Image (cartoon, rainbow, N blue to C red; front, side, top):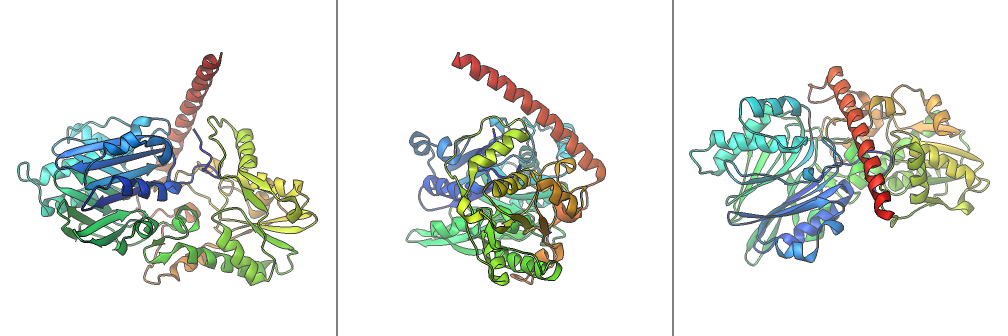
Length: 518
């Protein structure tokens, strides 16, 4: 079920939020999910804690569709976690994989996860053969939950937990788990736990809010949640760090990994995060402005005589880069594409032809801005190229004389294995093509890509303390050091099997729909 808010194929990640308050948390966690809806539209879930009792509601779809008033009334308690899901591992079709996940042994634990584990299959075997724990779904997040539960059992003295035991358990998780993971979890009767992988690949921030009853705490994927809910950002969760806030609101934290290096995913700044968020001290909006400047410098340097009458963004994430590029080149900036924000769901999208139709439904070209002009279209990135090809054709159909295309990101040549569900290598348009071949494929007159070194500098200049970024989809350098060619081959084979399964399920559902209609 592809939804109208998805663009350019599988691109999004998940969003998480956890809160310890002095009163009910259900409404504010719901609001937090809405603010993170851009990070996942496949499913939503919310769990609150009331003493040793959990209250849970989750299901497939957008937040507004999953929750009703009756659901919210049942979510009592002053501690809770919430999750919006975009599938990056496991089946995209199974409502059983909506998060948070739950186990009841040795303690009641619920967990929400943003990221992707690269050793999930090996961990599943360990859990079954050695830890005697059973995983019910294909989700790596359930694997992560069971590893945490096992480490808590191994470190606990009997059936009692304290902060020291919890931090030891997270240290055990770090020793066993590989990949990207930002986590919020709740332990029944104890409180809220949050932690981040030793490279800090996926974002996680902490905030606080003073009330008459005492201090309240929140942790979320992006600072936009803190801003909107009236929390003051404290800091980002450090790579390898764990934060534990008990039900009385006592805040504790500890570094739990033996070796750490902050290397956040650079795609958060290119496309994934909201522009009004700050991640690891870096303003997302500021980085996108700088991407536009560096892209303009590249045009000045490499194609100084490029004939352009007007610069246009593809809404929404490329707007800052397009505006800054136009300013730098002293060119008019225009909104040539109008986005339809209220398009209905596309239930079945079996092939490229339907994807192209979907692009036309989401974007409409404003003919008066194109007719007889040489246009420079700016987008945040190019992945499959299907959307770019359709956009170029839309511009030509609207009367553009020449259509140039600029990407604020470098060529996407490799799969991302850390929580962005990108296509396989064979589906990535830049994986085996030259710039000229890509330009011919998408039908533009001139193609300009961002340089990777420039992109890294654009982001790093907003926080010079960060020395390295996770850039594997551009350069094939996987920061965790455990991603091999064999792993990628296996990943692609599993994806192809999953695609075939989803196509069969789509056909079955279509037949059922037709039978019902008859």
